[in-house]
Length: 139
Image 1: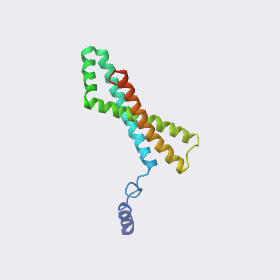
Image 2: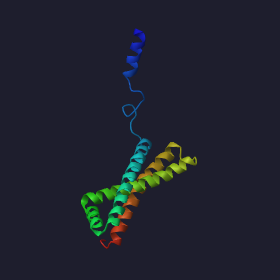
Image 3: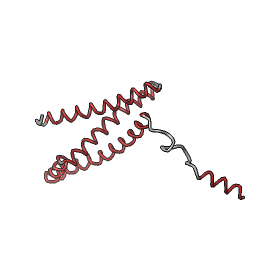
Image 4: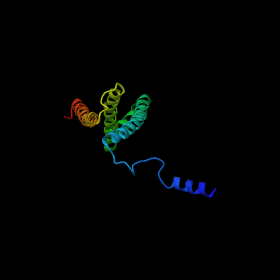
């Protein structure tokens, strides 16, 4: 009985599975975590989109109030973050589809595709915002 208690105490003194204390972050693990976070951000952004549609259905006063918020610094930061999450999740999803088809599992290919996703996210986000401001006549 005493032996089983001491083995139980030893078992709980170490982590159940290796985690961030053991492994250093790698590009593949970071992109995986970012993919999950971007999915959560897209879900929250979808709720905001529903609020925008409800405000449009309620009339001009509600819609104008929400549009004023969208034009504020906080609103634009949220919209920018949502667009970053959208493009990242899109490109990383395409990367996952390639993996599902059996391509890009070698470590150098995984790193190349990871960097391509990060660079593509930045380029597509900037291009979308420049295009949007150009369409509004600001640029």
